Image (cartoon, rainbow, N blue to C red):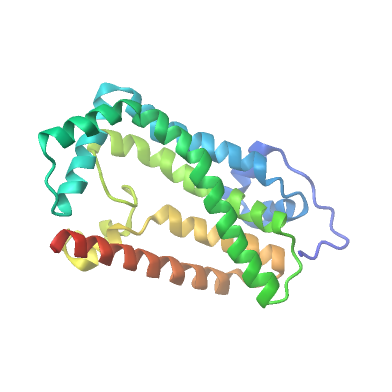
Amino acid sequence: MPDTAGVDVPDLGLFSRATGVIFSPGKTFLTVAAYPRPATILLVVCLILGLATALPQFTEQGRQQMLEAQVRQIERTGRTVTPELYASYEKMSQYAAYTAFGSMFITVPVLSLLLAGAFWGVFNAILGGLATFKQVLGIVTHAQVIGALGVVVSAPIVWFKGIESFAGPFNLGALVPMLDAASPTASFLSNISFFTLWQIVVTAIGLGVLYRRKPAGIAVACMAAYLLLVAGLTAVFSAMVNR
């Protein structure tokens, strides 16, 4: 647990917590550690992600754009989208906005619980930490404000330019414009989101505050795990495309 003996840790409102995670994570996570309140911030994150993802699909242009993107992704794996299959996808796309919105209230909480459980297991069971699961969950859910910010900022660009990168328009692939987009290096970098890296750093700061550890080491370990995951997913998708 954080060492707050003799320190008056003020409670913060929801807006102050959300903006604090962006502009002053160290101080904000002192409050989060003392008053975790993961459910409230998680609800806000789910609402933001759900609206940013679903709203474009309520328009005919947005629905058609997502449908065509889905078809292109399927065809890249070597499958043929027959007229009958296309008609089926088009029928399902009528409900895509509702599905996209509702899915956020399932996937985000589940992933938050899994991630918090992994951190709690490592830091408590293996490294002897004393933080509660609720405190760790508070760190994880508050850090997701960065991911929600990324989706909001990316949504207009995706809408107008039709960018289909898994990591959105703000990815490291932009650093290597000289490479063929289909090359392994370019594919790998294009799947690494700047906002995910930022969220990892913010999470590391929060865990550092909570467990009184240096956040740099935590960030390096988390980034290594993230990069390995991205590399694995990129390799699997490339294998499916090239088979």
